[in-house]
Length: 334
Image 1 (spheres, rainbow, N blue to C red):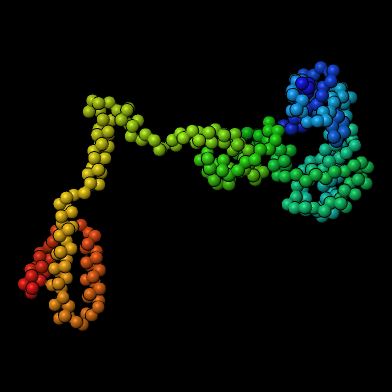
Image 2 (image 1 turned 180 degrees about the horizontal axis):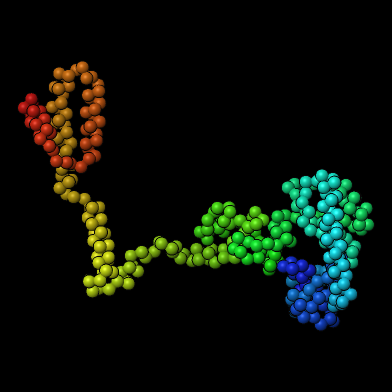
């Protein structure tokens, strides 16, 4: 087992673990630690605890000491230097005409390095800019390109919900978010509804994604699918006089009527079976008329043929007096 302590260097930043040694620390204590970038100031957010040696990323750096008042003064001086370095950086970028946007400037605690954070649409050749900045600050210069999500985390702001941004408040790392999460939660796919101020999908889509996925795998019915009529029947009384009972009776009567319409009518089937025979008789009776009216040509035959095809799929209707007269004439000619 190894004893470690969690230290955070920025507000809502990532937590790094260090070896506290013999120093007694509690959550909230300011400390000076040794990092890859050099000596840094941080704050304890995870009290000392013992973990498995396999869970620790080696090599484990040491906590040098508790932060003193002198260390706090150095921290305040570095903050002043960062503000002035930011203005100088803006001037130099404008001078070189580079397509980049300066976001933030950070001094290391021991002033061994100055880090300039910027955003850009693509790769930027800033070699001349680095040389110019190094001649001004007389120290190591690092220009680091970041994404829009990191920019929003550094600058902060208010989200569409009206609360401070999650990434600038408590999120240590950015987790991948996909449009599939919004679909599983039945959210609007309008980009303006599911995007944050950084222009990317909101990080909060990840919060309930696992719950929706688990419910979907369990086979729970979706809203509006199951039991539309059963709750109505369960909540209704059997007095037969109130409005609820009348509503249930109307629904039952409507369903019974629908079932009756779906069932086939024997009388209608018999009429449908007789209909082609009658149409054939009409077709035979129409043949002499076609010979007498030869001038109509194929148009009459086409209209008759199409008329017969339509009649085969129609329900039998009551014949008027004109249809009965035509039928009697056809029988006399036969």
